[in-house]
Length: 221
Ligand code: HEM
Image 1: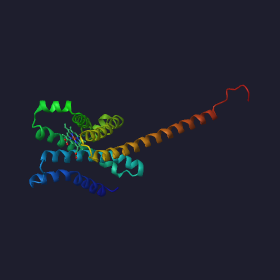
Image 2: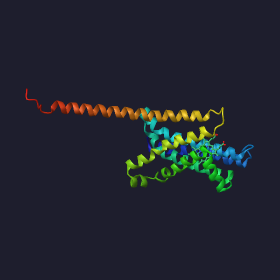
Image 3: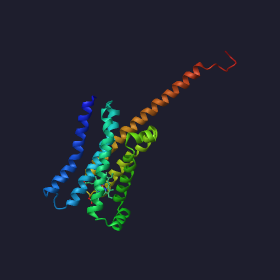
Image 4: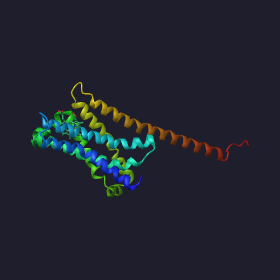
């Protein structure tokens, strides 16, 4: 992909990723947040966090399934936007929903499993965002960095669990997100199994070849 096409793609991702925030700001100034503005903001920001998380998780499965790699450069940007929206979602909860009532918030985190799970997901996102720079990749080393960034799968699962736990009966959206996540994880597991089988076959072929060229120890010719 050319440099120009890559820039256009990144600008498009910035535009799409910022549009929920612009919508929120627009609705705020035009009195369009509905009867419960806090709930509207929390839900919009939570939905956007989960969508961006899943979008960033989808980049590798797309490469594995279709053999294309240009989208891989968007993974970091999508992940950072997911972190940005998770922080906004959390800020609404702290500053507007609870108005900095720390005791009440701690009680909420302990008492409500969906809040506990959301907090764990957000906490796990912090080291990933902090190590997303090229300098940090070099400092950690590619192998350690990749190992750390596998946490994104756990975060995706916690995000979906958070939604499944808080959704009221009859709301199907969390199940759709769970389905997408299962599909993305399924592709990774399929690829892992496929590579394990190939490695095993190669090992067996090497053993077989070495056995065929090794000098026979048998006394009989
Ligand atoms: C990666 C982290 C997180 C993700 C992906 C996430 C995602 C979501 C989603 C998808 C929703 C439902 C939106 C809808 O109904 O349309 C939601 C709602 C909510 N989330 Fe989060 N969230 C995260 C972290 C947090 C944290 C850290 C808190 C607070 C400590 C939090 C508090 C809430 C609350 C209060 C609701 C609304 C619950 C209700 O409807 O009563 N979330 N979140």
